[in-house]
Amino acid sequence: MARRPRRNHTSAFKSKVALAAIRGEQTLGDLARQYDVHPNQIKQWRDQLLEGAVGVFDQPGKAVKEDPQVDVKTLHAKIGELTLENDFLEGALTKAGLLSAKND
Image 1: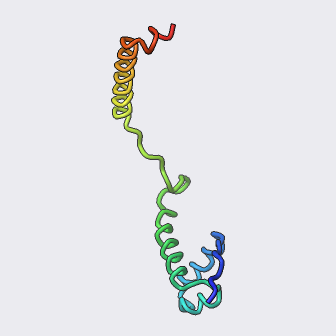
Image 2 (image 1 turned 60 degrees about the horizontal axis):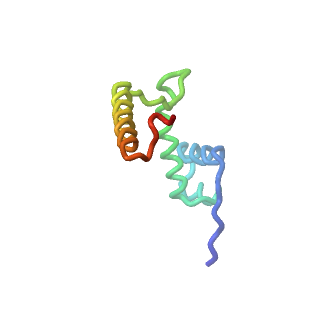
Image 3 (image 1 turned 90 degrees about the horizontal axis):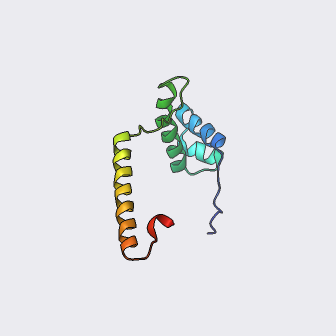
């Protein structure tokens, strides 16, 4: 039995099939034959659509995904740590004669 080449379905096609599965007018097997897609794939698309539907009504006018909050204290601590390491290594290289004092 020859394998079929891998197919990439558009998001419009996936949503169409997933909505048909949610309506429940046909079984997954019927939908699979109609759209020539495996029933497990239809179930995955349906589940993804249902999980993503929750975010549609969360905050109108805003994107579903929000940027993570930046912890300024942590960033300042990391900057200080890196500055300290940089100064230490610069001093060590200068003492070893591998780095001229403040890059002449």
